[in-house]
Image 1 (cartoon, protein in one colour):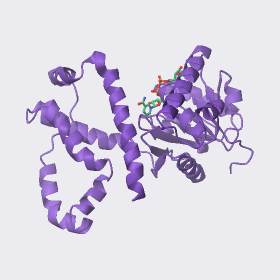
Image 2 (spheres, rainbow, N blue to C red):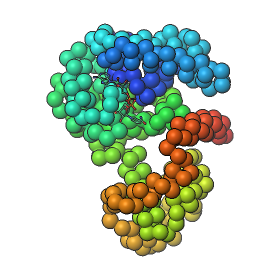
Image 3 (cartoon, helix red, strand yellow):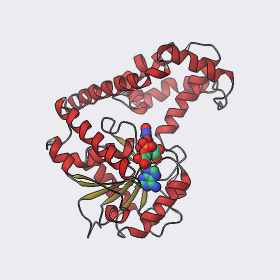
Image 4 (cartoon, rainbow, N blue to C red):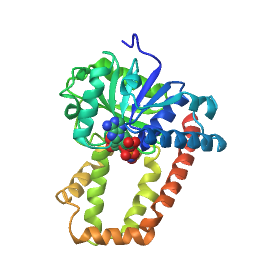
Amino acid sequence: ASQGLERKISIVGSGLIGRSWAMIFASAGYSVSLYDIDQKQIETALADIEQQLKTLEKGGLLRGTTSSDQQFALIKGTINLQESVKNATIVQECVPENLELKRKVWKQVDELVSPNTILSSSTSTFMPSKLSDHLKNKANMIISHPVNPPYYVPVIEIVPAPWTDPEIARRTRDIWTEVGQTPVSLTKEVPGFIINRLQYALLNESWHLVTEGVLDVKDLDKIMSEGLGMRYAFLGTLETTHLNAQGFEDYCRAYSKTIHEVSSDFKPTPKFEGPHVKEIARQLEAEVPLDRLQERRNWRDACLTKLSQLKKEMNKL
Ligand code: NAI
């Protein structure tokens, strides 16, 4: 199925996510063609990637078995789309989250690619059918949605359109596994995919609890960071229940009535509008002012780095 294709990845869009993809694929020995519309943007991206690879290497955190120089040498920038996508195994699109722009970019790619190249989008919100109904190669279209930063957070949601060839879904999954990510396959597209559906369920309930004055923002967030999140870093929601009783069937016997009763108390979907927005923002900014967001992000990424090392160790046990 991958006949005629090279061990080459085309990354379309060299921003935050495009740079991470380039580094991940290069660490697994793929040559990477990094495309953007603007030469300056590519130069900035390449300089940033080189710097990031060096820093990772110094900290002993570089992925793969080759040096940062060897990995960087595999990444080439270009403003020529045809050259970038030629014989690529995957075209991984990561242009800004704008439907018209993405449809336009995919149309351009569609005219230039080989018939068996995987067409994969990093979109976090658009259904694959919305991105590909106008393409002649639409059977090759799929979504590979990461969580930021993908260099440390391995999960990838693979979402097919109704017309995606199952072989494309399978090949996409195999490639993400090969480069060290953790793919999760959806059998059909659903709005928000899975990550955002779960995230929004928690976010909606957080909104209600805080806006009804049950607890403040700081304490609400501790429920995840000092409680549920501790085990969710290792176990999913379902396995958590399995371990909290003598297996899932026992859990359902013991707790199904309670779960249903408590869940019946849930409020309708909130809108995240009105004066409560200001109040929640005020409480968050009291802890992390807007001019210190980057500092806090750096701390978050340092935590994720350590956590990913711990997970690797624990998964060996
Ligand atoms: P970004 O704004 O950092 O990068 C976008 C890049 O696309 C820029 O380098 C820009 O010059 C380039 N670009 C603009 N028009 C282009 C065109 N016509 N052809 C080629 N390149 C073009 O955006 P970011 O954050 O990397 O997001 C990219 C995609 O990844 C979006 O779809 C986003 O939803 C998705 N995503 C982002 C996550 C995040 O946390 N930032 C997480 C998961 C998915």
